[in-house]
Length: 208
Image (cartoon, rainbow, N blue to C red; front, side, top):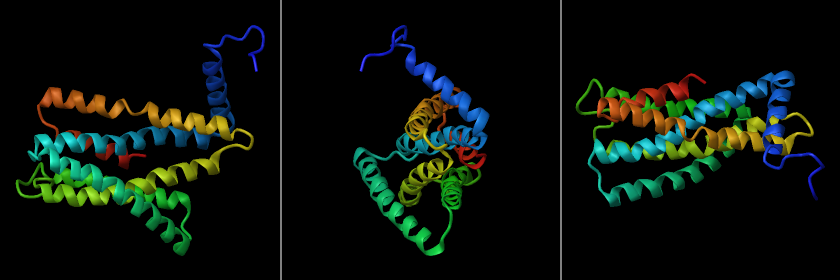
């Protein structure tokens, strides 16, 4: 159907988003805080995937075939992990929030282990074998973290705003995809090393 008279087609989306944000901040502050925290930790685990490729290439000198194996391994483990966590929740009766927080805790161990490499020359993401093990760990937690983020968010949506809120959720998700790579590129440019980026990733997944 045509837009109402006097409505600017270029501005209507922004106006609706602003009104929705104002509504969330005023009447659903918990949902607003969740979106802010989701912006941070989703950027964290998304940047892990990006940085891991640079890390494997620059720090561990891994080749194209080895990087391709990592790219295949992670989504396979993500599918397995998503189902495994679902079965675990059915057995344990944990809440969506408890599962998500646990997943973020497990994911934070990835950059934490990498930070061990600041103090050791033998462990702390110093070998390709470690990276393969952590890729499995990352995949097993990644699919579940993404699924339970959406499940928890659905519990916080005010009735009648489902479509608008999930649109805002996706904006928050994709809107954070620039932050981690930007910070990583600045750190890499200033230090010439990729390992210090792990400190940012650790903060992004622990602080929320």
